[in-house]
Image 1 (cartoon, rainbow, N blue to C red):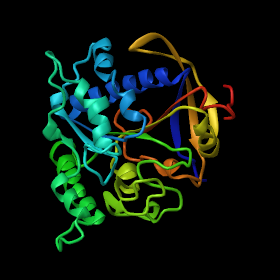
Image 2: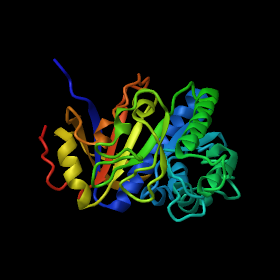
Image 3: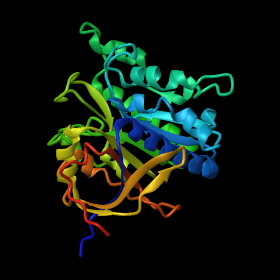
Length: 302
C-alpha cells in the first residue's frame, strides 16, 4: 500500500502573521543546526519572501536565542541571470529586505563571503555576443553548483539544513515550472534554463534531487486568494490538530493541520518532498499560509 507524503500545515490569520510564523520556524531550525553542526545552511527564494524575513533578528531576540549569523551560509534557491543591482535579482531583493537589516552594533550580520550569489564576472560575459568566451546559462549553473556543493560538504555534511520557498499561482517553485523538462532532472544540484515562462527567461535553480534527497527541512510560504487553487490541488487530506501559540508572539494563535499531499503530485511545488532522515522526529516539510489562501480547502475535524 502506497502512503502519501505528509506535511505540517500552519495557517495564520494574515500575511503579516505568516511572516511571524515563518521567522519563528526558521529560529527553531537554525538553532537545531547550529547546535548539531556549528553551522546553518539555508536556501532562500525571492518574490515576496525577502520582505517576510525583515523581522528575523527580532524573532531570535524574542526567543532568547543567539542567531550566530557568522555561522550562516546562504545560497539562492533560484536566481535570474541578471546583475545583483537589477530589479529582477533575487540576491538584490534579499540584500535590500533582509541582509542589510541584520547589521547592528550587537550583530554584524551574515558575512558577505557566506552569502553565495552568482559570479557577476561570469554573468557579464553572457551579453557579449562578440566574445568567443561568452558564458552560457548552463555554465553559470555549473559554476553555482560547484559553489553550493563546496559549501554543503565543508560545513553541513553534504546536506542543506533548510530551504525556504515560495510558490506561484501556477504551482511553480524556485524556477521549476509546470511541464518543464527540469522536473525530470535526476542528478544535478543546480540547473539552468533559458525558457522560463516568466521573465526574465534565463535563470538558474536548485533541482528536485537536492531539495528532496539532500535537504533536512523545507518550508513553503504563500498568502492570498491566488494561492488557494494550488492548495486545493496539492492537499488530499487536511486534518485539524490543536492550535498553537507562536513563541515570538504569544498573542498569535496559529491553526495547525496534519496533511497528506496529493499523489501523484500535480504541480512542481508538490513535487518537493524531502525524504532524508530527521533526527528530531518532526516533519521535514512545513507549509505556512494565511486564511485567505485556505479558502476552499476541505478540512477534516479531529
